[in-house]
Image (cartoon, rainbow, N blue to C red; front, top):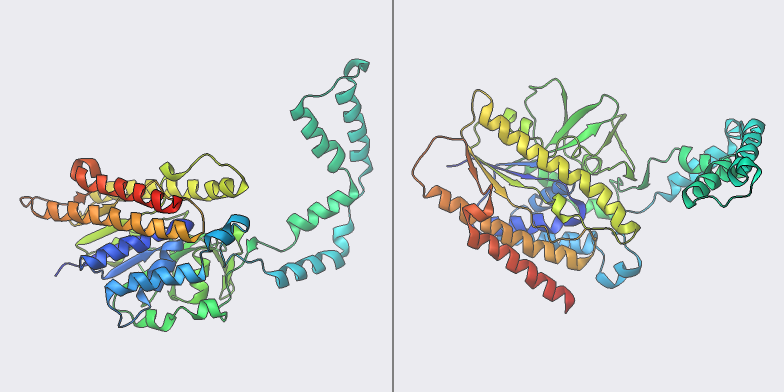
Length: 414
């Protein structure tokens, strides 16, 4: 019997693609012995595998409902509150950080800097009266003047800027509340008992190395990685703690943040730990083609996060395939790529989740068709790469993905 692994990469609001992929794979009775996860892929994979005793075909629907009801916001609400339901600021920690800042005498030093005030006055005169003649500055010069000669020397502004950027707050939001109703809705005990081997990563900020969390012990083979132990609510939050967006997570006095931007889905560890794999299915849900010209700060922030995730993911897959082709001893299994539809948005709303699910299912069905086509070819030496080029492998199948996108657009507009 074939031993398969699936990798689910990061991509935040594109989570629906993963759900659709898993739905199509379950419909095709394709199951997995190993799950390598990161960021939102870890959330989808862990939620999907928590439903012990549930048919695979029903797990995708339950996973979809978990994200629809617990993470994504309804379309009407999202129009004027464009944020998901879990990225809430930690008001208690923010209040304590501000209080600590206010009562610390050291934070009142150097607010008044006479030399900077004098320099600001001199620079202002040279800007507005170059060569003793009044001149209206260029817009860029004006903006720099306001920043550096008006705001920067002002003691009150200096205090507010210090409070904003130098208080002990590491993210705009926090999701690491292991005892919250939301986190308790995930059955981590079921994950520990799950049949497949499941692991995800996070980045150890203290020792500067990847940490791997799993539902059963891993074999220690690489000194540059940390093998932490069981998957938990905090480890899951750590694996998606993107700096500035989410607060870092402390586990056993060690601070962690998201690991997906360092190593997408731990391809190296996947083959180190499971050399006897026959197939690896790759579901990477962000791509640079998805990034659109931003219309506002919402789009710009999403682009900032997803551009890094997309390019790192693309490069990691390429590097992994290179090593599979060139390293010795050679692994002779099969890699099946589920191509990334470029038609999802980065909105945390219900319609994007549903559209992503439909597109992900269509993309996976196309990959499954290419996989079966490859299986009908005469035997040949590996490694095998299936669905690298959808138009070449299965043009009609890829056209189906495009058709599904247009159907999604019609439903969204209705």
